[in-house]
Each structure stands twice: as structure tokens, then as C-alpha cells.
Length: 211
Image (cartoon, rainbow, N blue to C red):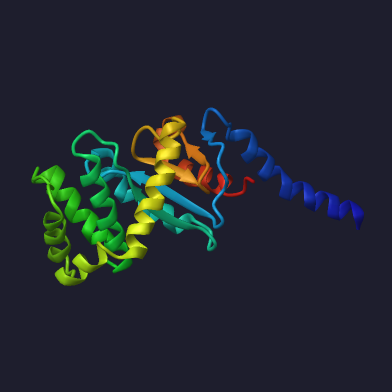
């Protein structure tokens, strides 16, 4: 019986050991000296001005599907791109939170990516974002109210604070960047390109197990 249990344990541990050997800190991911998030999460830092971020949208459903039940996929819009002022980019971050909270996150993001990158139209004020929100089925008056909401503005400010800490430490310098549990930063360039999304999901799964 003991021999059987030892053999069974070895079978279980071999894949875990192989996974740990495959993924190397400093090559496949880096570790920020910050506290882990309380809940398991994968967070994409992105910008509506970023073509690569727009292209990565197609992968998000597959990434989300591969996550364990206790983990969530979240998105934070950054404000350090050079195409607009930090204030305008923070406004976009707040508007993104409004859209997410009202069930229009994906539709709003697609429309805003299209507005900036395909139509090449500017966003200079809140009314520009409101028009996009309304175009995907949102309510104009609710948008204006939500953009001033203590809860939504507070979330946007908290996200910016975390972004600033990661940026100052040079852990977040470009987009899209995916960070697991608030501290494990994925190096996308280190992954096999011919099996990219599968490799991405395997690395995420591994990072979710780390302390």
C-alpha cells in the first residue's frame, strides 16, 4: 500500500516539477516587490491607443476560459501613452470602468478602439466618450452620473495608484502587459510564437500557484 501511495504521489508531482522547471523568473516572468492581491486575478494593462492591445482582444475570451473558477480576468487602462494627456487617458479609464459596470465593457472597448485607430478620430472631452457609450446602447444621463460616482472614480484612482507604483519600478513600461496576482509580470516575448496562446495560459496557470 505504501509503495502504491509513493508511486501515485510521484505521478502527481512530476508534472508540477516539470512546470516549475519550464517557467523561469527573469526569463518568462518578473516579480514586483509588492503584496499579492487578495483574490486570484490576471490583469491586463492596456491602452485604447495601442494597436497591439486591440489585436490582443481576440485572445481574451480564450484566456478567460482557461482560468480556474477562483480567478478573474480584469483590465486597467493606462495613462502614460504619448498620444493624449494623462487627464484624457484617465477619463478613458473611468469610462471603461463605467462600461464594465453596466455590462457594456466589450462593446464600448471595440467601439473606442475603432474610433481612435480605424476612424482616427480624437477624444478631447467626456462628451466624446459619452457618444461612444451611447452608440453601443448605453444611457447618456447614467453615463454622466456614473463618471462622477464615488465608487467608480475611486476604483479608477486605485488602479492608477497601482499603475504608478509598477511604472516607477519599471515593471510596467509598455502595453499590453499582463500581471498575475498583482506581482507576477509576464514576458510575452519569451513565449513560443507558434503556440503562443497555449503557452500564455500555461504560464498564467503556473503563476497563479505562486505565493
